[in-house]
Image (cartoon, helix red, strand yellow):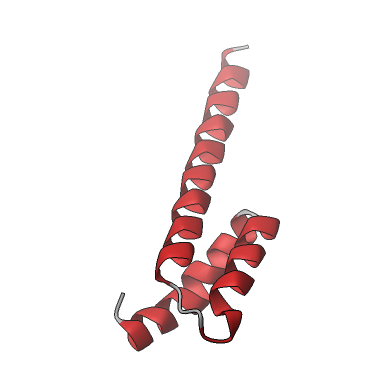
Length: 72
């Protein structure tokens, strides 16, 4: 029975971390992304609708390009 509670705590912790990461990426995109060609709106919609998958896509694909282009 103790093993089940550890697994539950582990999954709850992973869920909380993924939620915090999702919120962080959503705020980062909304505040710092450029508005040229509705880029900000498109990425916010992608991140919002696809949850953690969209957040990882933004973090690994778009964010490095934005940092190079805009420096923020």
